[in-house]
Amino acid sequence: MSVAIDNSIYISDKAKAKVHQLMTDAGIADDSSYFLRVGVVGGGCSGLSYKLDFDNEQKPMDQVFEDNGVKLVTDLKSFLYLVNTTLDFSDGLNGKGFYFSNPNASRTCGCGESFAV
Image 1 (cartoon, rainbow, N blue to C red):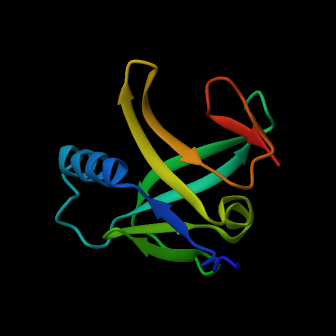
Image 2: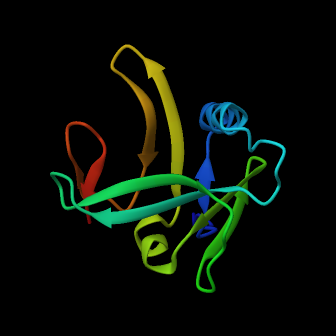
Image 3: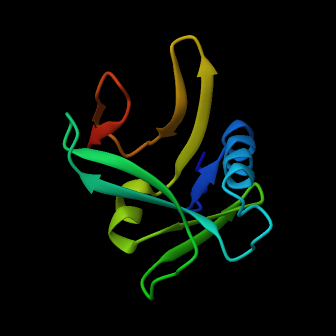
């Protein structure tokens, strides 16, 4: 049995709700030029860290995705690490915040904010 892979970036319902809340708090929820920029930067205890920002300027080599009604944009280099990753949000007792469910990560650190491939 084969599984089709869309080569995209995904966002869960919980993360979508939190993104919309943060955009509303920042006063940009009604501005359709804003999107969620996801990326990967060097650093963290496992070598690579995730980065999240609101942005309204698309760059020429950006990869653009839409999932669950949210526009997600990443640079080409980061996309190589983020392909088929899902952005999620946890508000449980074990930690609160955004986290990435990344099938490409060979190991992650204890805090879940950095990874290695």
